[in-house]
Length: 238
Ligand code: ADP
Image 1 (cartoon, rainbow, N blue to C red):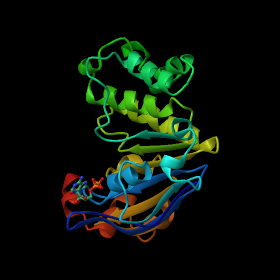
Image 2 (image 1 turned 90 degrees about the vertical axis):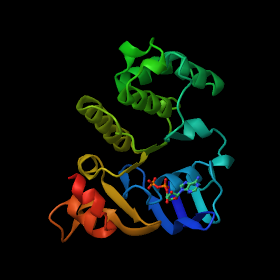
Image 3 (image 1 turned 45 degrees about the horizontal axis):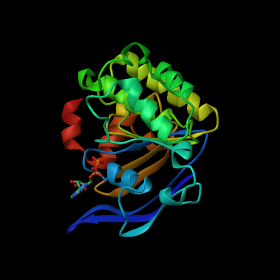
Image 4 (image 1 turned 180 degrees about the horizontal axis):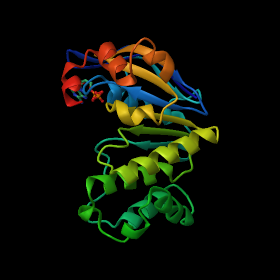
């Protein structure tokens, strides 16, 4: 469903993503794992048409994002820094996106319920916690009931209830045959959520396969991650 082929992206003299290839299958949750600065967001930004690659392709269902006929109904995305207007109320933010994409208004209530934000829907976004903002972003990604979900660090800032809710949601989404790609630098959350893993470090893919494949020969997914990525700083965090 998602196919990244020989993708390269440079910023000035720096190669952020270096000849990266991987595919993401439907019916599975795929974790895109790597330490900060590894190239995860850059890859996802190119996939979602927000950046032009210097080489290679990033396709969704065989098309570039900008060639999709109904982008929001095909791909739901959560990216860093794509926040709503702070003065706006949560529900109004979603209604605005729904209306500009011909999505029925009742879907706004559904997605608010799905992410557990119904009670806060009438409050202004500027009063939201980091976790509530994340939930609103995930709700927006779900609005078009898309075939593909692409979420950059979706559990950032979420409390344990939020993490469990998002995890169940993503598992259910994949179980219904859809495609889920989520990036993270947090291994512990990913161990209970993802089926497959693509590990990136320094702009290059260092491992990919099922979570079991990737952690084979290591005592845990975390230690596999540190061994593969050389994330010494990360080691200290745990
Ligand atoms: P990750 O999402 O894995 O934390 P990023 O894709 O954000 O990593 O960043 C990969 C590398 O590219 C980093 O070294 C980062 O500093 C650099 N980078 C990302 N975006 C830009 C940009 N707009 N301009 C310059 N450098 C960038």
